[in-house]
Image 1: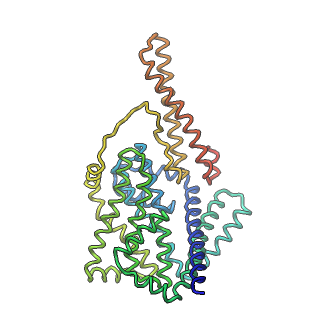
Image 2: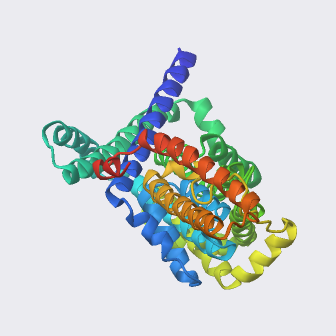
Image 3: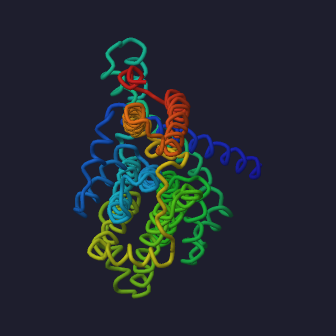
Length: 414
């Protein structure tokens, strides 16, 4: 009977995780649809200011509800030459802070309002059915996503509560206290799920039913921050050297932060002090520690962005090679498809770039006709091939975007 109970609760846990992750994605997509081109505008205003880059990364990640998506986007921008590695580094630091917003939302599950949030999804569905107002429908979709997050958490909590009633299972969880093992569990689970927010949600739910102590949970959070780098590392495969460096910066940021906190945890008095200053119940303490880790690491490394960039340039060597006639796009990148509003903005930039090339070729052809000079024939043909290539790639890219657009305004642009 106990085996069947475990199997049933595992299935319940997976169902809850699925609903939770769907809610996160739905809310993130809906917030993107409401933000539209503002997201790209925010990125376009990044200059040499470190604080502006950090604020941009935090704000964008808070909106799209995924630091992995922001980091992959940054890798795409660096690959296209839109962001420098220094600018990308500050955005990545901000993204690590922005992702903690989800953890803070999740920590509210222990409050009585969790059921109210879950019930709001029903109201959102009614708005979608009966309202034709585009803005109201976007708000309703955000509410539905938020509601599903709490529905998923409630389902996971129910499954884990049954787990906690089984002595063997509870003993297994409670006795897992090795810091390195806990760190690896956090890293591997996050790498597999490819969502630090989902791992944090599972962790907070485990803590809420007494299956994991606060000290152990903090080590898992350190692992979560390392595991979230895997998505960006995978996205950097096949990119230019600068984009690979951006992914390595993300990994180094979290490795340095984790190392610093591990050293602090070794000192008992500092360990107790960190646990003591964390406010609220255990769920909220975990969420606040996640925020504390990323803010502290950012404050520690932000003054040394230049040194960090130079170090990464040494360990990931390579020279920037520019071939103006190479058959490749300048702005559009499949890595940006996770954020359709950004992808659409880059598609417009690619069209403007293609139009500029076409204008140059037109001017060259007029000049050749007037002067009877065919010396630029080879360059003209190469550029014409590039224009034809861009035309096909832009069309294919627009088809890809159209499948994930949630805004009627953006549909009209396509």
